[in-house]
Image (tube, rainbow, N blue to C red; front, top):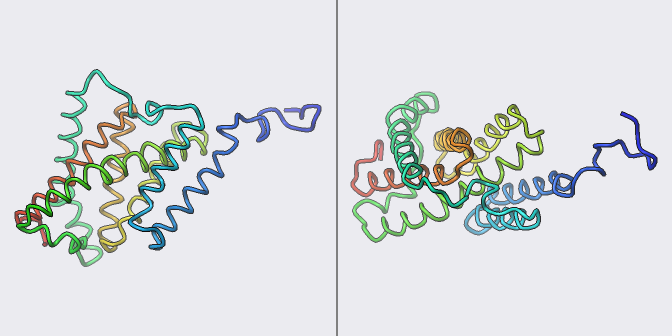
Length: 233
């Protein structure tokens, strides 16, 4: 391909649309926020800051929530049923199959001591469920699946292979973000992130399914902790 008169190869960096031209700097900023969150520099976690970045990114591109799978839908019933079934099913698989298998390798189950006050504490259960469905289910799914997975896939070329690689990369990041649960917890969370991301893709990037699945998974876990029935607790 021959360069144009001003020395720029058609299709090159300067010819790219602004949304793609600044994709790499945007991802570098997101990576910096993630690193600060992992290092404990940010209050709470990186998630609220990445939510803001994701919203600003959509606004600057002239895109709406539909671009990340948050469209108003006509099939809410099916979306809810698929999300609840997937979330409950995955939590069962995680607690009774995946986590025991991980523990045989690492020597320990995920550290859920942070949630120990849930046992028999109804008020703490309500607080935990509120956080689970807002910052965790909606916030993390918007950040890791809707925003980071999409932008990473676009940066990698936007083809099927790019989406697969982006799914793996964002799942690893999701796992690292759960470092407070120890190595087993990070591996378990990474597998969960992969499951939610795969669900997002196979449902035609319907982020609501992933949000509901994530919220259901956390709800089942918190209810088991509240009832004192959580495996290994």
